[in-house]
Image (cartoon, rainbow, N blue to C red; front, side, top):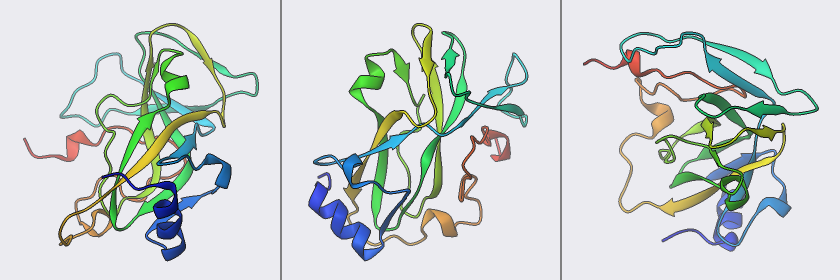
Length: 178
């Protein structure tokens, strides 16, 4: 079951869903549109290593936009800071974004109850496409949780992505033990 617009508004009023900045025009019948933040990042090394801390370089999207190139991985960030304390948030691309050939996440579309922060986007594209800071990039949908949560994400001592800032965060896979 997905929360409807009325239920999302009720949860925002109750404080269990936080979206900042919030714009009522971005609320769909069962989702909330999020926008591309002003900062993108790319990995410095051409070859990534899952056991290594792979570093990234940041750059701002200029006013005239930035052309994404196919076969490149860009890390982006949502303009919106969100908190979700009682539901499972899912981030999906908008159909308009998909029709431009833009994927906004490789595998990480689901958040956890208790996630607080801006969403890092794993952006790739099929054709060269110019993107702009502030453009609609995705939509959040919320699922109710059955049962009580023992430890919310932001309270876990090993939560690698809790409190993400308004710029992309690189993979923290290297912090796992394997």
